[in-house]
Amino acid sequence: MLTQLAIMFVILTLVRSGQLRASRWDQFEFAEALWRISAQRMKVKVEHLLPLSSKTKGLLSKLKQIGSDDLLFPPTTNRYQPMSDNTMRKAIFTLGCGGNTAGNSKAGANGFRATASLILNEHGFKSDAIERQLTYQKRNGVMAVYTHHARYTEERTKMMQWWAHYCEDV
Image (cartoon, rainbow, N blue to C red; front, side, top):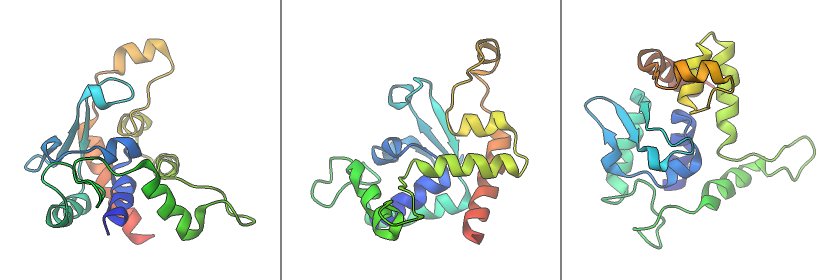
């Protein structure tokens, strides 16, 4: 059940699996519907604020009932260590996405990010908001100077709510 919720959480928030596996309850601001990941934990070393959709908040409620006091996704063997990086990968492979059959490519939890980027771009969301949600760095040095502090919070909040509904309908 915890692994299933972890995969759903990755899909709905578009975070990297490592950020998810080490997520802690004190990072969440429930009244503001935000997940705050410190700069030290981010690949790009910049604090990341993630707006939470109503679907994601529902997952948090389920997790609160079965999770630990500190980590959202601890393994059953040690409640003080993050879930293994292989746990979600193995579950996804078990679903038939291991790349072992013809016409079936190998998939992992981080692959949902690329798929979401494609779908969100095709549905007209601003690329800057999508890139900020995915914590991609601007490759254009001039643009990066002007946009690295932009959060696009309002656009991202609408986008993530739309994304949650999209995922539910697929």
